[in-house]
Every structure is written in structure tokens, then in C-alpha cells.
Length: 186
Image (cartoon, rainbow, N blue to C red; front, side):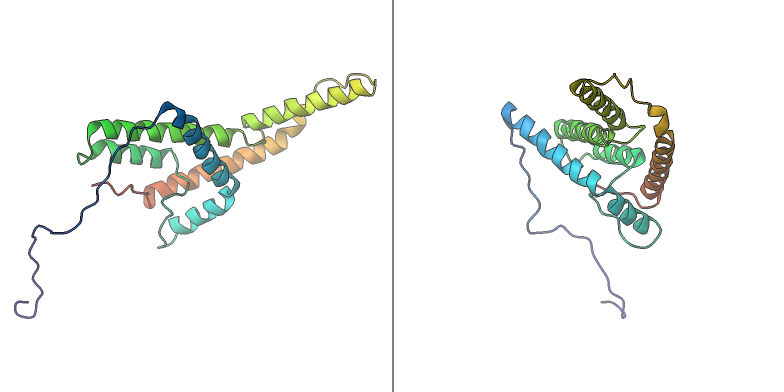
């Protein structure tokens, strides 16, 4: 303390620093790891309305964002940029992190796209399954083939889901710009 003011001097530190070790896994560990990733994404999708609400609250208040919450393409790009920009991690591990990020993004898109609502693929699959059951029951009870299901009747649902997806995307992009999630890399 000099003249009532606190003076700080930058010095090295003595103590414990974080250590990590990369352990190579056998090929047999891939499918269980993918299964765990799919399970986490399914859990996230099931709780998506709640998580989007939390993102909205954080984006429009002083509250912090959940680092494990949903992100937009802007957030994914920012994370990839953080990984690529750091020089504290060896190149091989940065490449592995980027591949892992890309794989997680693809799994998330896969699971999200299977939600049984039009215009997502899950909605088309649902239409095909309903069609198969209708035709199967007609055949079982010796009735005339009911013909293909009229998915044009689903247009209002498709439009509503499209609007919700646009709003969700806009909210996540806004949140990723004003309150980005950082990986905390040096």
C-alpha cells in the first residue's frame, strides 16, 4: 500500500495448475459414446422450451447464460473460433476438439430433425407411419384401400412450427451475439 492506494505487482505463481491427459480409447468405445451423446441431446430437446426460456431471460437481463444451453450457428462458429485461435492447446487436440464439436452438432441436428412435426423429417416419417397403419388396418378388416394420407391438411401445423423455429433461431442468434457462451480457453 502506497499513500493509501493498493499497489499490485504481476509475479509468477507457485501452486497447482490444471493438468489433463489425453487417453486413447478403443474403437469399441465409439458407439457407446455416440449413444450417450444422443441421449444427452434427446434430454435437451425434451426440455427445449424451458431452456429457450432461460436463454431469453439471460439475453434480456443481467443473468448469465447456461454454458450447456442451446446455441445457434453463431454460437457454434464462435466456439470453433475459440478452439482454433488458442495456442495453449496442441494442434492435434484442437483438431480433435473441432471434430468433436462438428460431430456433436450433427448428432443434435439428427435428433432435432426427428421431432414428429412437419416440416421436420420426423413429421414426414410420422405421416408415412400413419399411412402404413391406415392401409394395414384396411387390409386386415378387408376394407378398400384408403389411399395416401392427405398431408396438405397439416399445412397449418407446418406453418406454426416454421414460425416457432424462426423465432427460436432469432432468439438464439441474438443471445449468441449479446451474451455469447465462452469455452474459457486462454
